[in-house]
Length: 212
Ligand code: CDP
Image 1 (cartoon, rainbow, N blue to C red):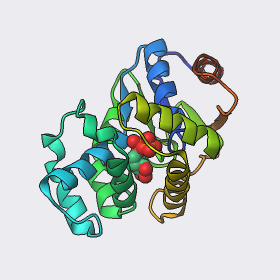
Image 2 (image 1 turned 60 degrees about the vertical axis):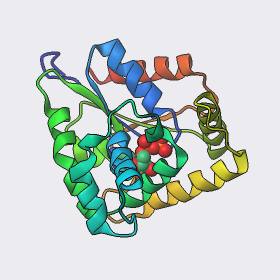
Image 3 (image 1 turned 135 degrees about the vertical axis):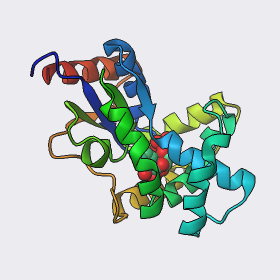
C-alpha cells in the first residue's frame, strides 16, 4: 500500500479484551487521533442514569443520544459497571447505532487517518480501514483485568459477578441483529490472554506494520 494513503486502524473486540489500551498505544505510536467508540454508548447510558430515561425504551435511548453533550469525557461515572451494562443494552437498538454512526464515520474518514476501537469498526464504521485487528482474551483473563481496573478506580467488585456480567455482555454483543460483535474477514486476530501490555502492544504494532 502507498504510504500516502491515510492510515485508518480498526480495533475491535469484546469487553475488557485490552482493545482500548492497544488502540491508545497504536495512536501514540503512529501519531494518529483515537476514538474510543464505546465511550459514546456509555455517554448515552450515563445521560439516562443522570437525567432519566428507561433503557428498555428505544425511543428514550435515542433521545439520550441527542442530549449526551452534557457528559464530559473525563466523567468518572462513565467507566462504572452500571453505565457499561446499560450501554451494552442500549447499543443493541438500531436507532441508537444510527444516531451515533455519523460522528464515528466522520472521525474515521478524517484526512490524516485515525484509530478507532469498538465492536463494529472493521465491519460497519470503517470497512475501508487499512489495518483491522480483532483483540480478544479468555473470559477469566478479561474478568481479572476488569476487576483490577475497577479497583484502581476505587470501585471494588466481585470476580464471580464480573464473569457473569462479561458473559452476558458477550452474548448481547454477539447476538444482536444490528452490527453484532464479529471478526471482520480481513481482521488479524490478537489473543492477549498470555500477554502483558508491552507484548500485546508490540504485537499490535507489528500487525499494523505488516499491512503497510
Ligand atoms: O469496556 P467495555 O468493553 O465493557 O465497554 P466499551 O467498549 O466502553 O463499550 C460499552 C458498550 O457499548 C459495550 O458493551 C458494547 O455493547 C457497546 N459498543 C458497541 O455496541 N459498539 C461499539 N462500537 C462500541 C461499544
